Length: 285
Image (cartoon, rainbow, N blue to C red; front, side, top):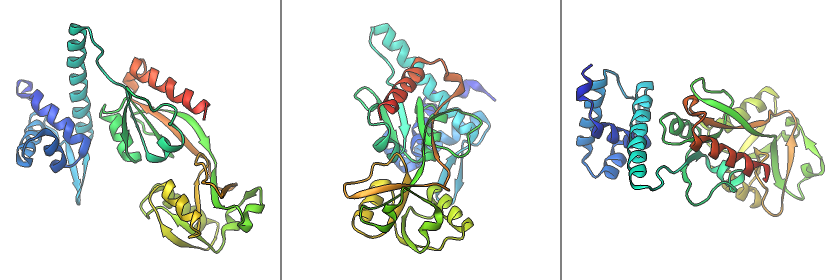
């Protein structure tokens, strides 16, 4: 491998591509043509002697080498920015937090502030943002801990059923899956982890149910419950809308929210300060 051919321009372009995993959007951000970006990424892969991404149908995903290249590119950019900032006596890097919609809405409101860069994405995008160095810290629900990241439990919540205040099931202090028999449920789309886990649990308990409607995100699910479309199972951190109540489902497993960062950055002030701010926000939640 001829490292003299390693282009900093190609690295910077690849980091933008890694953010989007889409050549069209990345090329637009870079203000270059899509073929030109393809050439840069391919030349970088040829120089490193490793494929940097894989294609699964229309979906692109970074390989481990691609994650490492994006992480190196961002680290290099941060070092240059830090050098220039020190040279001119100004502040350099801005801490970056990655999390999903539910975490921002119901957990992290107290940590969101000016001077903090935010990335919003589902669990795979949050993990990718941390792995590639795009985010300093990520917050996500994890059932399997990634071997390549440091994961710390921030908070654990029960799974609850959301329903109108006058619903018959609201009379009970807590519920079991069997109580949901025959219920029309508002659920996420089939591929989502919450939908998969819920269907598996209902099937194992032998509980018959029907899909009232498929909805993306807790706010829309709560809205449909308010309209009387059906009931919904959500994480216990979700605050019910006026007129709605929640009851814990005792035979569903609790949901753990984890903070994630690269092991090599355990002592990085950007990581430690952001983790401290997240924990403080959760204590006041």
